[in-house]
Length: 455
Image (cartoon, rainbow, N blue to C red; front, side, top):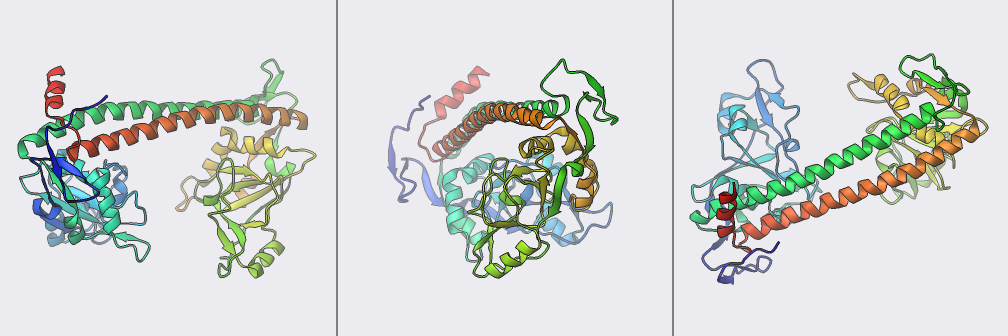
């Protein structure tokens, strides 16, 4: 859908902004700010009188609240009074290692105000003058032009981007007259709500596809491919019946070796050889380009301690994202960190591809979850992995199951990729629409009135 433009435009005087409506102002943001101050983190909580202190981690990249586990802190009276939030305040992330997060801004609504909460020292509170409506300010700060300025102006000399009150006040914003501001807000609220609904549909589709794929995997490795196969009681209440000719036994019994990676920090000076950890593996491959590299001396030492996987081994993550698995399918000179377990199947009894599928199934994942539940720092020990029970058909049947599951997974992955691409396009559309409206590239005055009349 195309939108009308304003009758007349003028140069903004800012190269990256271009032209703006003739009757709009272009000015530093500080001219519209009444209050521009930082927050307080306080001390460790003590009891009922503690205060919720909101953090930048509770802001999404697109400027929404996601408060799931609020942090309670002890603030003195001065800090509490000075950082108490009221409806209409804007909270901006001023310190982050990611350009996606620096400058993200959330709007304090009545619900947040009623929590009587404050905000942390990694955030900046903006309270606007009456000349700019807070919700328009929220749209302005979250549009890509403002976020680009904040990212560009942030200090990155330490690798951590930082903003301050001065920098925030320096960004250049287009400022429409007061009587047009509500029209822009109404238009964007209506249009972004429609886009958000479409995004939610695609995200739900992705979730359903993931659930379906997981169900297919779990059924294949516990019930097999033949629906008419004779069944027997597995002896495990959580597992129920399994095909009669399958073996239910500890995973370790069909493996030649189960060990974890290096328990030392690698030497990274003059690093040459890949040192792979949990963060470097996905469902399909290893990120050899982005992983740490260790020195030749350190690498030789780690080889002697058995930290190098072989082709046909299965890597199993025991720290971070616990239970992620990957088959090593190609020879590569690398060693692994202690966050990964190397499982080496006995190839006379256990197929690596089947083992990978089995480890991804609910049958194994639920056992692993029960072992790590309640731990202060979730981590799967080698001893607990040794306790995992598996269900094992004969070797040739293992290979057939792994092959079928692989083909089905490819189809599900393709469908999820399509849905993820649709989400990306919708998010880009949303961002472009907000930028066009708050910079005056489209004239929404009549559109907002028409949308209001439809409701």
